[in-house]
Image (cartoon, rainbow over all chains, first blue to last red; front, side, top):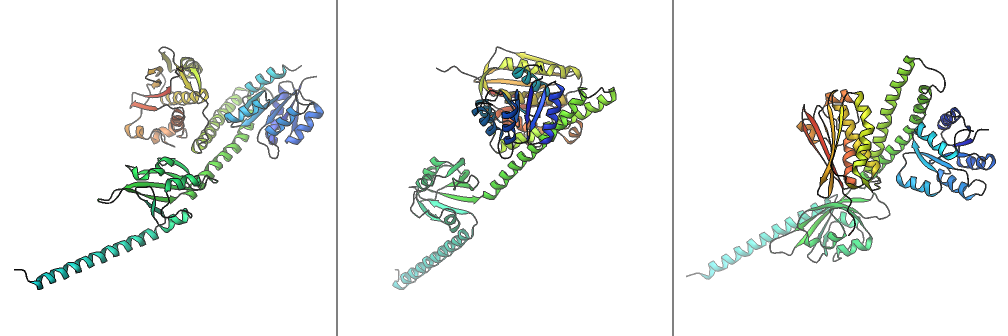
Length: 124
Length: 377
């Protein structure tokens, strides 16, 4: 079975288009609209990769990343952060907390697939 | 012989004159006092020992615990005031020594970065009297709040614009990549048009976001050592196919390699803006030349084109916000008028400088500098 990617974003339109893209590349896609939901799904479904938005109401992407990396069951799941207008200190913060990559919106599909392949390989 | 009576008369006249003069001076003093009391700006006077000798009611309202006789520098330090512009704690401690009019901002409330007073201090030199200084404080808190509000608003709007832009652009990419089905050439052409304009819109959002960061002082510069020649080669190679499409020749003239201290992303942005401008304003068959060399402690990078050039009046306002060269060109080429303003700010934030030379009808040359890396010791 193909690797599963969990998409986390509070914007349903972004989730929709990202899932579309991910499936077109041959991966399986899951989605969560909030940090809480993402943590629950990550724990239950153990996706191979998480694409995580930073600015979300309630729990920010950084909060989610911290919890993921602190928990035994989820700490080995790689995370790529995708956010709007990434400032340098934000990128540093994300990388420090253990994100594999930090991409900015509007994301470049070519860059995204390159990074995904680097982290989890081509679809099995 | 002088009569006693005449002397007495002269004396009386003299006394009357003095009394009249005293009255006039008193009247003038009272008028001045009323003027100072009526002012909406705070006014303070300090003597040669930097002590407060006068403050009007508005100044007292702004600085409620300031008393006559207080050393104004010590007072500012104790209260933890913030300064910007030409006024700082050092000047506040040496007000009687200032030689020229100084202008700046004082923040009298360290807990709130918007409570600012536009402040002017001028030397007070009255013949025969000790030196001192006079200062005025004008409340610009509301202005600063509006400015912050504007920056926050722009940042929020830009953020909100990016989400739909991301979705539209991705949806179009999926269509164009024929991920969801084959397209005929006309459909492809329609999508290309949409894509070009989405990119234009995205660029506008980026520019406005940069602008709001610049104006809020939130632009981050991350300098590192870099080979200038390598940076320029990369940029020129990236641009070469674009220029070739418009039949523009693009030449790179390099001298010995220089290591600069620069923020690579920002420098790329500067070069992209300059090359885009040359591309936009140069007709097919023209030439764009990028040169780099050393000038003192700075690397000098020029982007020169054989385009339509810039007239003298336009040159003067070229680096100003929302400036487009000539109205008729605006329609011809599009753009926000933010590119060169942002470019200048990005150059200056890295310690460099930017200049322009132009000959209308023949071309334009824009040169910017970046500090050269020097080995320690």
